[in-house]
Image (cartoon, rainbow, N blue to C red):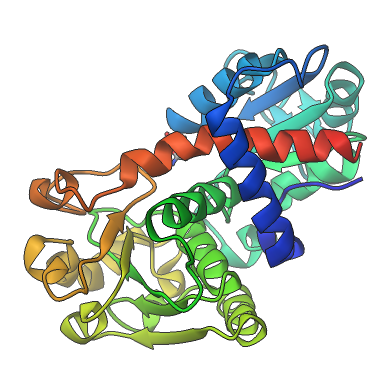
Length: 333
Ligand code: CP
């Protein structure tokens, strides 16, 4: 049984195949390919795009979506093996995953890291516990990676650029007042390298490098695909000549769980916000972001309203790629 937990275990040709299916589904969105199928959507964190696009996509294919928010409209869940459950959680993931597997054909979960201990969070314990106890395929709706967003980004780039191999892709850290999840940055780095792009990671300093697991995966991807991966802390040099600028803010891992300590570093980095002056250095690059985005904090109004901004197109493509993923997993079930 195949899960969709991370694109690390999906080859470039499998990703291409998912994107081709997504392109077909975009042309013919309504069908009955999920008739009689049901999907549990577990949200441990807020969402607008993910929740809406999954629910709508399942409905467009004749399936049933069940949205559950454990701890709010469903019982709180304990994910630790062997836990003495005298806290808030009423049931264990062992039963939750097993029971949902009896009702549903797929389980999707959003479980952000807890922002306390990166050595723990980097193991992605929540989704791995669900996958261990489920007897149906599990889909990652964002944990420490965001593979659905990766596919939406890549579908958008293929729609706009045609071939992406060899094109220049800048993943830039951008300003935000708080340290955010590294998931989308990890994912963008992995998918762009997997598809053979010439990738630059721009961040304020070494403290903002991504976890070694993802830096290593991206390096291996680039080697396998004949692409490139480099790191820069020089804004002007990094923007120059790029075909794509992808922005995301994230927390510095050495300060994980200590936002007040990171602040001294972060507060000096407001100038990383994406603006027209920086975009003018590129080779007429596309700009995108996973959204949500704080305007005039992460990117200016001018950038967000420009013709080259494809963030809304990428958000739309979440709908189509997720439908392709669900059909693929159901096929192999
Ligand atoms: N990009 C994304 O996952 O959006 P939501 O957090 O609104 O689902």
